[in-house]
Image 1: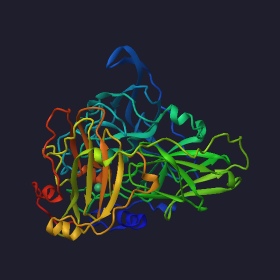
Image 2 (image 1 turned 90 degrees about the horizontal axis):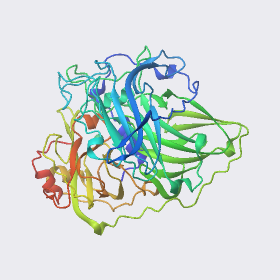
Image 3 (image 1 turned 45 degrees about the vertical axis):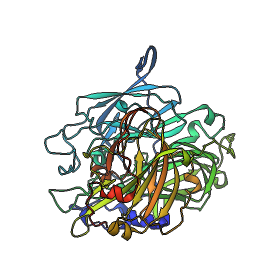
Length: 544
Ligand SMILES: [Cu+2]
């Protein structure tokens, strides 16, 4: 299996011909590091209550969040930059809710009619003639009815809104909300349409983890700017097809500021870290090499804290970290990602007494037994290239968005999904509605797979790392590897999506609908072999 470092190199450094910028970008070395305080994200507040959709005799909190344009200074030496944000702030206000307490959100599109980033009308769902600034909001990690999940085709234009119901019947976790509009999602999120949503519960509260002002979301992404300090999203060398295969920025931002600093006390902090980048994988560590603990994954607490010196995070993954600054009083320590600066912590020489705990056990995560699986799906992740090896399109299971739905799990059943990755990129695969566990990863012979449609393993199955051995909703499907996940499809029947969370891939066909069907319905054709998956209507093209 590739090391995380090799994967990072693959994902972040590989030259992409179509990425050639057509106008100059701001030189990031011209911006001083650590001159702006890191913003503490505002909290979302309900504006009232509304009847519970399923039980009108009770009322639930009601939020109204408007997506609108704003101009904000993203670094001391930059002019205010145009962004699109929830309630005009980027990242949007954080939802702080309690498990078991449902709520309603009216998401209103109050954006300008014209998009300010380069649309590509060749992409499915982004055709000419559609409203440019259409949006639909998805709460990533939420177990919600299909009509509230933000189906990519359910977008709406400026002047319209949609109200979503979030039952919140799930464990404590860090979720995040973001735009999910078909074909322009990468641009809308890049523009700023993303925010955090944290669910707390009683199991977690009993652990006495750092809380209140010592529990801080860190929403991290990379951006690029033009010489006027405006957000710059590069385009391909082809003006008629501006889509690029991945965006990698050169300015690192935390909670919406470039290379900020945060003043902390010499004590334990709980950082809720979200990689909200379009395409960049981060490998976070501290400049003094200090160890820290990961206590939770995407979908909740791990069984026990895992001590780490670095944490590798694909786009959309979350890491719940405990960092103890008590040994660093009066000094600074920087958060890094490989050779990139991210932010600085300035540790005060003294502070309040730290009464929080670092428990040795957190929450049981019962393993879903493989014997419960009723379906074993083989799902190749595919890239089609043009004649000069430029990626043109990405597919899941060899299928496009508009192809008939092939994944129809039955409600309350367990399935194993084999994510077969013959490409050179790691793809973070996200399933809506559900949480899952990683079974293992195993290398296979890419040549045999591409040329002979045979899946031949060339390594042993490797269990997930200790810090991945919890509930997940996004998994890194590494190149040349079959990643197996086990999923219980519970909650609701209806249509959802699964997709790669590299947003440029997702916008270019690396997203498929799936449908949870009732226990009595037919579950569609069972695909039981890689050859069958490949043969079923898919003509092989060369992978990169
Ligand atoms: Cu991908």
